[in-house]
Image 1: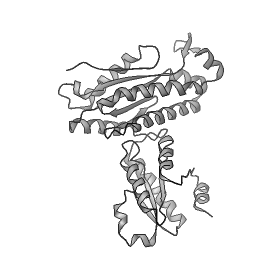
Image 2: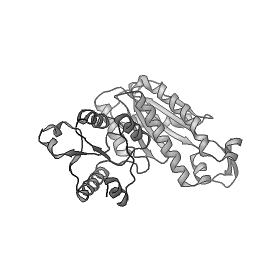
Image 3: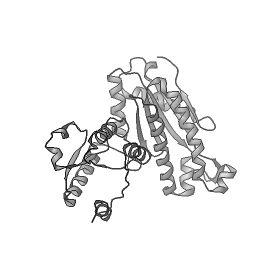
Image 4: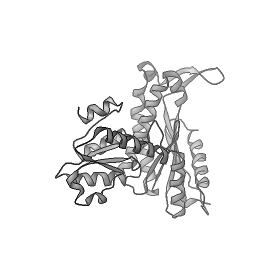
Length: 295
C-alpha cells in the first residue's frame, strides 16, 4: 500500500506537488492542516529552501512541516539546518508516520487559535501580532474587513455556500497581502465574515484596492443566475419586512499606528479600525476608509 493510499484510508484528504513553486501556490490557495516534504537525494537544497520560505511566511508560517529523510542523510548532521517541526526516516513505517502526523496536528491546534474554516490565525494571534508591533514601535496599518450582506447570502443559500465565500475571501486577502512581499504583513480571521490584515503603511492603499477589485470580480459567481442578473436577493429583514439585499461587497476600515498619540495598547488601534469600518459600511458598494486624523 502506498503512503497516499494509507493516509487516504485513514481519512486524510491529500494533494501533491512535484516542485516548490507549485507547492507554494497550492498552499496559498487552499491552506492545508499539515505539510509533508519528501526529501529525495539531490533535492535537499531546493526543498530546504521551500521549508524555510513557508516557515518565514507571516501568514502561513504556523503550518506544521514533517520532512521524510533517507536515514543516511541524518549522518550528515544537516537536519538541524532545516526549518521543520518533525521528521521521519525512510523507509517509512506508516503507523509511526501516522502517529507523528496526529501529534503535530494536535500540538498545532493547542498552540495556535487557527480558524477551523480558513486556517488563518484567530483572535489571540491577532492581538499578539498587533501588540508586538506596538511594543517594537514598528509603524503599521491595521485593516478591519467586513463582508456586507453576508447574513442575507448565508440565509438564502445555506452555510455550505457561505463557508465557500468565507474561504474565498481568506484566500483572496492572503494572496493579495502575500504579493506585496511585505515583511510586516499578517492576515487573521476574527470569525464569521470579519477579517484583519496588518501591512506596512505604504502598502495599505494598494492592498485595499486590490482586495476590493478582486472581491467584486469573484463574488457574483457565488450567486444563482437569477439573483446575479437582478443584482440582489429578495428576502426579509430582522423585522420580517420584505427587503432587497445587494450582492455582497466588502467594507474595510484602516487605522495607522503613526496617527495615534501614545499608542501602547492594541485596544487603542483596534477601536479606530472598527470605527472606520463602521464608517465605510455607510457607503454603497465596496470601499475602504483610512483614518487620517492625528492624536
